[in-house]
Amino acid sequence: MWVDMFQPAKSIKDALGCVTDGCMLVVPREVSGVPMAATRALIRRGVKRLHLVALPTSSLQTDLLIGAGCIATLETSAVSLGEFGPAPRFCAAVTEGSIAMKDATCPALHAALQAAEKGVPFMPLRGLIGSDVLKYRDDWKVIDSPFGNNDPIVLLPAIKPDVAIFHAPMADRFGNVWIGRQRELAMMAHAAEKTVATVEKMHDGNLLDDPVLAVGTLPGFYVESVAIAERGAWPLPLPDHYGADAEHLALYARMAATPEGFAEYLDKYVHDRRAA
Amino acid sequence: MTAAPLNFRDEELLADVIARLIGDVRHVAVGNASPIPATAALLARECGHGRPYVSLLQSRKHNFFTDGARELFDCAGQGRIDVFFLSGGQIDGAGNVNLVSTGDYEHPKVRFPGSFGSAYLYYVVPKVILFRTEHSRRTLVPKVDFISAPGASEGNVYRPGGPVALVTNRCLFTFADRHFTLASVHPGHTVEEVIENTGFDFKRPATVPETPAPTLETLVLMRETVAPQLAEVYPQFATQVFGVRDAAFAG
Image 1 (cartoon, each protein chain N blue to C red):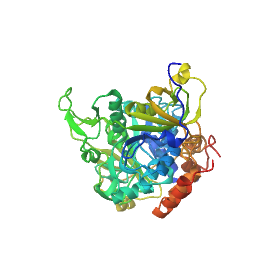
Image 2: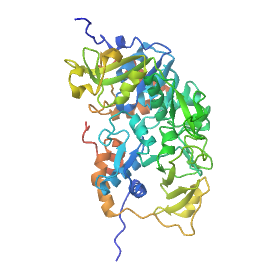
Image 3: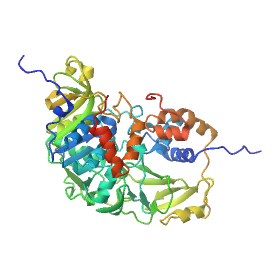
Image 4: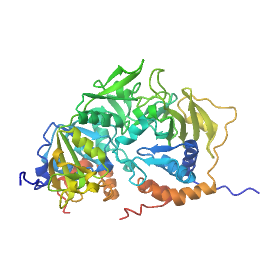
C-alpha cells in the first residue's frame, strides 16, 4: 500500500478538531443532511464565536447554536422552525442585538460559494438592486456591467469557509462520502478549506468504483474527517432515509420559547447524552 | 332549483383562486412555508394532467432538481420558472414585501425568518403571486419597514419579473403599474371590510365581483388527489386542513 487507508474518527468529538473557536463554518439547509449529533457535540465542547454560514437557510441547528452562545456572526437568508413556528432563540438574539446578522438571499449564498469553488474573487447576481438586503450589506457592490449598456448588477465577494460540515448516508475507507442528490453539500466542500462529515454507516469497498454511486460521491480528496453518527440528523430528517421527528421539534419550539425552557432543553437533550 | 352551497374551507378557496391565477404555464416553483400555494400548484398540475411542471423546494418527491439547491435559482435566472409565490410579514401598496423585521432594522421590534430567495426571485420570475392569509392593517401596510424585495424597479434595472396578484383570506387584488386593484371579494366578505382592514390605498371598480367558489370537482380533486401529495412537505397542514397523514414516514 502506498497510502494509509482513511480511518473514520473514533468519536464525533474527535472528528470536530478543525472546528475551532472563531472559525467560519458552513452548514446546509434542513432537507439536505444537517449534522445535529455533531452540533450537539460542538455545544458540549463549548465552541465559541463561530461565523456561521447557513446555506441558504436554517432551522433547529442555528437556533440551538445561537441559544447555546456559540455564534458571533450569522450569515443566511432565513431561520425558522417551519411548521413549528419562528426560531425563538434566533429571533431573541437578533432583537437583542447579541449576534451580528448578515441578511442574505438564497441565491446570493449559492453564488458566493460558487465563486470560492472556482477560486475567483466574486460572482455577479441579478435581483437585489432596490432591496434593503443590498442596502445593509456594505460588502456587496453594484457595478455597471462591462458587457452591457447602463446595466447595473450586484457583485458578491466569494465566501471561503474554514470548515464545511454535514451529515450524509455513508462513507468509505478512502474518505469518499456518498451525498446522493444533495449536490449543495459538494459545493460547500469545494468552497471550504476543510470538510467534516458525519455518516449513518461505513460502506464496504470504494464508492468511486461503481459509476452509479460515484456520481453522488464527494471524493475523499476534499474530506478532512468522517465520524459515524447513527441517526446523526435527528431530530431533523435525512433525505431518502428518515423523516423529521415532529413530536420532538414541537417540544423544542415550546421549550425554546423562553430562556429558562431553552436551558432546560440543553440540559436534557444536549449535555446529557441520549441513550440511543 | 339551485344546488345547496358547497362546504369548503378558506384554504381550499384560496388554493382554487391561486390555481386559476397560475394559468397555462410550463413550470411553477413553490418555496418554503407555502402550503396553500403548494396545494394550488399541485391542483393546477392535476387539472393539466401533468403540466405545468411543479417544483416544491423542500420536497423529495415533487422536485426534479439534481444539481443542488442552486439549480432552482439558476433556472429562474434563465427564465425557466414562470410562476413563484411570496408572502411577507408586511406587504405595502407598492408591492414591496418585508420578510425581515419591523421597526428599525438594526434594532428591530419583531424579527421574521428572513428574505429567503425573494430579493432575487421577485425580479426574475414573470408571475409572482403574493399571498397572505392574515388580511389586516398590521400585515397590509402603507409602507414596509424593510424592503426584502421591491414591487417595481427603476427602468435600467434588469426586471423581467414581479408581482401580478395578492391573494388574502378576504379578497383577490391584481397588481399592475405599481398599484393594487381589488379584483374580487371572497364569499362571506365585503368591500367595506376589505377597505377597513387594508393599510394601503388600492383601486376598485364600481362593482366588485364575488370570488367564485371552488366547484365540487375541484374540491374532490384537492381532497382526494392533492392532499396526500402535500403531506410529505406540509404534514401539519395536510392533517389540519385535509385530515391526511404522510404514509411514507408514518411512525
